[in-house]
Length: 458
Image: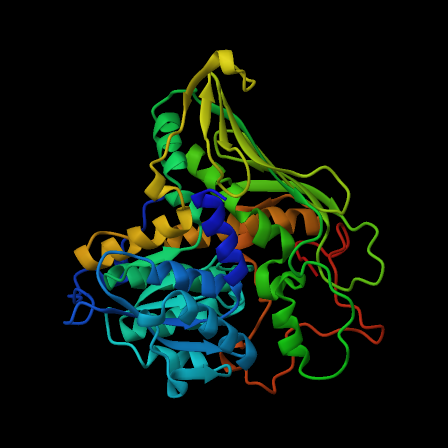
C-alpha cells in the first residue's frame, strides 16, 4: 500500500479552513488565558470512545513528531472495546501509552473521569456517537482542554445550535479544535482549493459527488435480540440510527459534501432530494439505502450529492467541479483520494489537463496531517478552531438527508431551527437508561416516510 492507503485503512481498522469562525460577541473584552501544554512540554491525551475511529485518531496523535505526546486515559461504555484499543495502541506506541487500570474508565460518566486526568492545555479526543458531542465538548471547554472530535458533529437542529454556541466559546477561550474532516488537510485538495478560488476553472456552476457502495459499517440492522441493554446495542449499531450517527448518508457522505462546499467557498441554502429503501429483508434500521440530493447555493449554483448502499450496484466514490472555464477532479477516489486535477474542458481529457497534484511523501496522509496541524497550532499558539465549520458541514449534510426523508425542500434555517431533538437528556444517561428510540411490538423502529410527516424525519 502507499502511505495514504496504509494510514487510511489503519485508521478504519483501529478505526485551509475557508469558513471564518465567528468571534464570540458575548465574551468580547473578557481576558482569556492562553492555553498551552504542561511545563515539561509533554502533551497528554485522553481518548473518549475507543472504537475504530477513536483508536485511529489516538494512533495519529501519538505519531506526531512535534514534541512528546503521551496517552494517559481511556473512556468507553464497553470494557472490551477499551481493552482492545489499549492493546493496539500499546503495540504501536509502547513508550507513549501510560494508562494504568485506575485511568481506564467505563460508563456514561467515563468522559468526565478521563478528562479529569488532564491538565489545562492537554488534548482530548471525542470519537463516540455524535449525540454525546455537545456534552463532551462543554466539559472540555470547562477544563481548558484542546479537542479533536470525529465527524459528524450533529444530526439535528437542537444539538447543532448547542454546538455552535460551544464553538464560539471555545474560540473565545483560545482553545484549538480539530474536526475529523480530513479533506481540509489533504495537501492536494488544499492546492486545488487555492487554484479554484483563484479562478483556474472560472466560476463554479455545478458540482457532483458520489459515495456509492454495498452495505458497510452497521448501516443495516436486524432486530434487537431482546437481551442486554437496548441502548448499548444501538450504540454498537450506530450507523443504523439517526440519533447516533445521522445515519448512513451523514456518516458516509459528509466528507465529499464538506470538500465540495470548500471548493465553492460557501454553504448551500436549501436542498431537495429523493431516496428509498429496497430489498431490505428483516432490516429495522432508519436508513434509506439510496439518496439523491440537489443542493442549491445562494447564487443558484447546483451541487448534486448521491449516496447508495446496495449490494451489486455500480460502486462510485468521486467528486467533481464544473466551472465557466473548465472542470476539476476534486477527489479521484474515496473521501479525498489523490490526485486532484484541473482541465480546460468539461471532461477529464488528458490533452486538456491544466494541473495535477503532486504531494511530498511525508504529507500524503490527511489523517496524520490534521493532527500535525493541530499540534503545531497548540505548541505555537496559532489560530486553529474547526468547530464552527464542522457543525456547518454536519448541518448541511443533515439538511440533504432530511430533504430525502421528508420529501420536502429543506432550507438551512429549517434544519438549524428544527425543534426535533433526537437524543433528549443525553447528558443524563446511565448504563440503565432506555434508548432514545424504541421499537414497536414487531421490533421495528420509526423510519422516514416522505410526504407523510411534514418537516420531520420520523
